[in-house]
Image 1 (cartoon, rainbow, N blue to C red):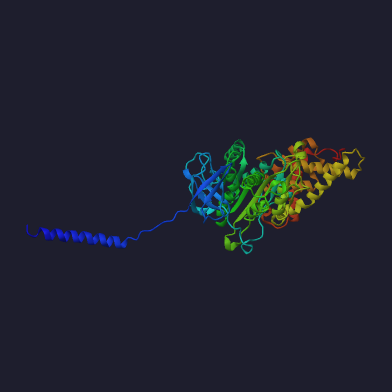
Image 2 (image 1 turned 180 degrees about the vertical axis):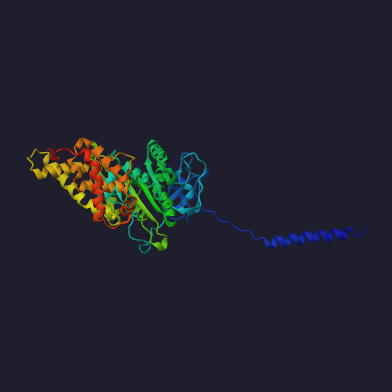
Length: 517
C-alpha cells in the first residue's frame, strides 16, 4: 500500500507527457473562406457584394446548393449569372467562392443519355457515370495541332453530299426561316452516322420540351441514341443555363475528339443562345449595340466554333464537326447573327421557305448554299459526277424564273428546264431516309448522263427508287472502289451507267421529254 502514491504519480506524469507531446505536434490551421452577400436578385442574375478575390467566370455557391458564374467583376459589385432556380434566393443571403470554373462530366458513360448543361440526368435512368470532368470553356486547338479536312462526313442527303459536301472537322452552318426543316437535316446527319464510328452530340438550346422529346424519340427509335449524347436546355430554363449549354456540349464532344474519335455536334439553335446572352448582358447593364446585342456577341460564337477541328496525328487524329443551326427572319440572311455565323463557319446550307412550300424537301437553296472546305474531302466518285450537276441546276433555276413570264422558249432551253426539273425531283428525299454512297453516286451519274430525261415527271419517284435498288446489286469490288478511289475510272462509269439504264428502261417514254414549262 505504501507504493500507491508513487505509482499514481508515475501514471499521471506519463499521461500528461503524452498530452504535451500531442499538443506540440498539433498546429492549428485556419482555412479562410471568402463569403459575400447578395444585394439584389432579378431574372436570372444576382448582384453580390464582398468576394474581393473572385475571378471572372468563377463558380460561386448560393444557399441550398445553387450555383452561379461571376460575369461582371467590378470593384464593389459582382454580377452573377444564376444556373438554377432562384426563387429561394433573397437579399442578404451568403454567397461563397468555390475557387474553380464551371465544369461538366465527360466520358463514355454519357453515351445514350439525356442531360442538362450541369450534367444532371433528364431521362430518369439514374446518375450519370463519368470518368472525368472538363471545364466548359477551353482554349481551341493551336494551329500547329490541326490537320487539313480530308475525310468526308456523309449526311445521307443527296443534295448535301453531292453539292454542299461536309468534311470531318468542318463547321457548316444550317440556316433558314422557322419551320423549313433545319433540325430535320441535322437529325438525318446524326442518323446516317450509324455504323460509321462517329460519336454524335445533340445540343438543344432553349427548345420547347415537346420538340426535344420528339427528337429524342426519333433517335431512340432509329437506334441512334446509343452513340449520341443529348444536352438539353429547355425554353423555361434560366438564361444562364441556356448560355452555357453549347459550351458544356462542346467539352463533352472534345473528350471523344481528344481520344482520337470522330465527333459530330449539332447546336440547335444558336439564335436562342444569342438571345439568352443578350438578355443576361442587358440585365447586367452592359452597353447594347446593333439589334441590342452586346459588342462581344461575335466572340461568344467564334470561340465556341473554333473548337471544332481535325487534330493532327500527334494529337490522336480525332475530329469535331460542327453543324450550328440559325433561324432567319423573313429570309434575311444579312441580319446581325446570321452574318456573324456565316463569317465564322466554313460554309452554309440555306433552306428556302419558297422551296419548302413547293414541297421540295429538303428545301436546300443550292444557289445560296456553299461548302468552302468539304469539296477537298469529297470522294473522287462524287467529284466526277457532281461538278456538272451544280452548274446544270443553277442554269435551270435561272431559266425557270425567266420562263414564268410566258416567253417563247427554243428547244435547247426547254431541254435544259426539263433536265433541271428531273435534277430537282431526284434531289428530293423524305425525312429519316438516308441514302447510301453507292446509291447516291449511281443516281447522280444517271442524272449527269441524261438518263432520267426521258422519264415522265409523274414516274420520277418510282424511277429513282429503281435506280437505288440497282445500286444494291453492284459487285462488291466496285462498291469498294467507289469508297476509296480518287477518281471514277471509265470502266466503272460504264458499269454504273449500264446498271442505271437497265433499271430505268421500264420507265422510258417514247419521245424525249421536252415538255413546255
